[in-house]
Length: 250
Image 1: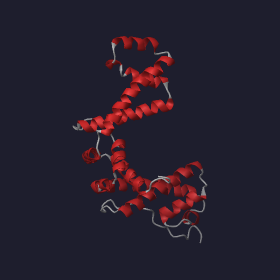
Image 2: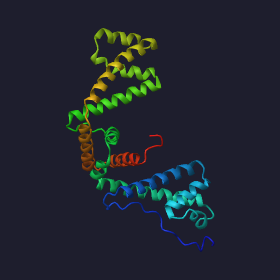
Image 3: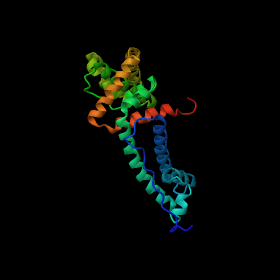
Image 4: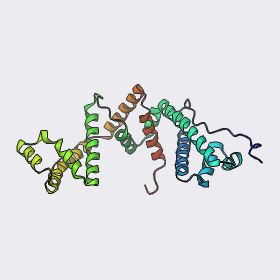
């Protein structure tokens, strides 16, 4: 059959945002969006990758051969255009679906996933919940220290120490400015303060219960609804999808 005679197949439309939560439907539709995105990323590196073209054809049109039979002249170009359109529409619908079913989806999360959701969602700086804010500040400090240790960056160590100046004796402040150019002096001082903060972090995390985390998550979702925060819904969906499809070996 020639390209002109090939019937036009309907393009993937995404999930219906008005549907009630169904774990199988969510997982299937979220997976389709992930595969569309993955196929597009592959074609951005190798526009002729037949596996990606066929994979996108299967998701977008329900027929992996369709890009070749319908768009014989430039199957990659057409499937990329269709894929980008479908991805944008599909992600918008999925975000609305998650928003409409956010409580049900949140309740599907296990304790570990709820913790991941709270830690990765936008920090609510004026939440009115001091324990939540203390917990998130603690997580932020831990992430910062992990990054500094990973990069072993003296300048980042100096910045970290600089923020501590208001809490240290005046004589040590003078020492810091005198010897801050000496890496052999900065590293031990950084280690001293980092160890102190890591002990505080450990204590805070040990005193944060699963019930606390659960309340924090509900607070985040409430705020997302008030502010219509699409990023929060995206993170909620990603966390549940990862829980449903853990990486191999976990």
